[in-house]
Image (cartoon, rainbow, N blue to C red):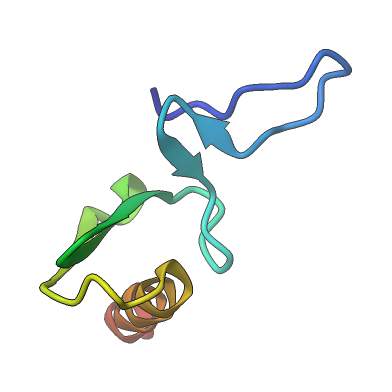
Length: 81
C-alpha cells in the first residue's frame, strides 16, 4: 500500500495504492488527501519519525494545493530541530 509502484521501465510513480509516496522534504513520508463538497482533508505520515499529521476542514472550496501547503508547514514545524 505504501510502496511506490513502478512503470514498465522501472521508474517510480510516487503512488502506492491511494497513498502518495514521498513528501517534498521527506522522501520517506506518505500522504493521502481528498476534497468533496463541504470538506477537504489530508493525512501525512513519516513512520521513521513516529509522526502523523491530519488536517480536516469544513471548507469544500479549499483547494488541494492549499491544504498540502498547510500540512507541509505543520510537518516542517514539527521536524525542525
